Every structure is written in structure tokens, then in C-alpha cells.
Image (tube, rainbow over all chains, first blue to last red; front, side, top):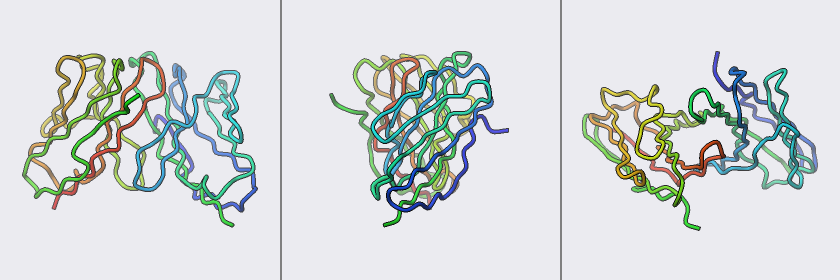
Length: 111
Length: 112
């Protein structure tokens, strides 16, 4: 089983739609969780950290469910510019904060 | 604040040749990662440094890949000899312990 798993998509949604991605992790000792955005042929960029209480940044909301070992990213009012691959990443204290990525979920927002 | 610097941006080599990549992390970031990203996949961790010590290199093909981080700042990743399947983007990232990492622009390697 992979340490971090994501649905590869693509998720094809119209502008203005709400879309949600999930990411599951296998190590229950995982400590820190992140969402990254990666545009085609670019490096991953940190989008947001995911806290136990959840966090929101504008149209983006991230949630953590420790019991079921997954994190989620919700994008409201999708824009064309949101089209990208969204990567989740997880670290755990057991392995000195080794940062492991999922394979990414591709989002296409159409006009 | 300057970001993570990597060079070169692109490299084309023949199989069995050697290549080296350089990374300068964000100032003050003790943790440095090297990742390999093949098209369509997520970044795969090759090696993690904490200051100038190796924390994890379990996924590094040690028969051909090596990395060092002298003085706990800059780092180099070397491949010798390269294989066709090493064609990928090599990403360097740095962070404060336990925080989200910041990436350099990467080096796109093509082995022919």
C-alpha cells in the first residue's frame, strides 16, 4: 500500500463549481499535512498547511480526519486559473519529518 | 527573501555519462530534500538532509546516485552512470523542521 494515495482524476468541472479532493495516508503517526499546487512543467508550490482544526484561505478549505486517516481540499467558486495538479504531502515524526507526496490529482476547470 | 536555487535548469546527457545537480536552499533552512519527479507522477523522495547529516536515503539508488551537503548549506546530487530511466525532473526543497517545504525550479534531465 502506498504511504500517500490520491485519486489521479482528472476532475473536469465548470467555472464556479465546488470541487473536493481527498488524500489518504497509511501511517497513523503522521504529524504534518500539506496541500501543494503544481502547474504544468513547474515546481510544486505550497498551497496550505492542514491543521487538526481545519483551515480556510479564501476559496480553499482544508480538513484533516485523523480517525479515517485522510485530508481533504475543497475549492469553492472554481476559476480557470485553478486548473493544475494538486499534491498532498505528509510528514511524520517517526521518520524525522520525511516529507512524502501523493501522486497528485489533476483539476481542469472549463469555461 | 531568496527562494531555493537550483542549477542547471536543463541537462541532456548520453547514457552511462555522469551528471551533477546543485542546490542552494533558503537561508536558515536546516532540512533539505532531493526529489525525483517522473512525468505524471508525484515527487519521489531520494534523500533528506538535516544540516549536513543524512536523515533518510532509503529510496536513493546508491549504486549510481550520491549526494552531499557540505557545511549544511549547499547540496549536490550526482548520477554516475546515468540510465535512460533516470530521465526526470530533479527537485530540491528546503524547510524548517516539520513545516511545509519550498521547492526550487528543478533540473530537467534527459538521458539519451
